[in-house]
Image 1 (tube, rainbow, N blue to C red):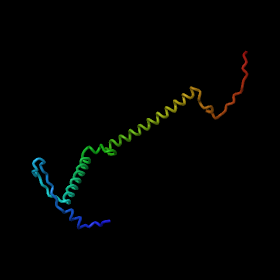
Image 2: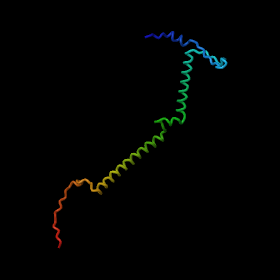
Image 3: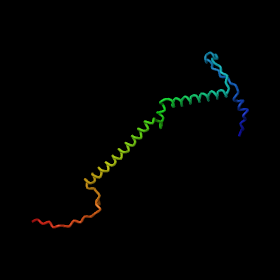
Length: 131
C-alpha cells in the first residue's frame, strides 16, 4: 500500500494548467484561463455551497415549505385531528348500526340463537276443552 506524501499532494494541487477555448474553424483563441487544481476545487465547493444555501433559503422563506410532507401550519394540524376524531366516531356508529341490522335480520330469518333466556319458565299445562 502506498503512503500518501502530503508535500507531493500539495505540489500536485499547485501545478498550473492552461484552459484554452478556441474557434474550431479558425483556430483562433477566444479565451485563455490559467488554473490550478486547488482553485478549481475551491470554486466548485463554493458553487455547491451557494446553490445548497439558496435552495434551503427558497424552501424555508417561501410557501414552498408547505409542500414538504409532515410540515404544515398549526391550523391545518388541528383541523386534521378534529377530522380524524369525527371520522373515527362515524366509523364506530356505522359499525354499531351494522351489528343492529344483522341482529334484526337473524331474528326475522329465524336464525336467532336458541338460548337467549337464562331462566326457564315452567308453564303448567291446562286442558282446553271445548264446551
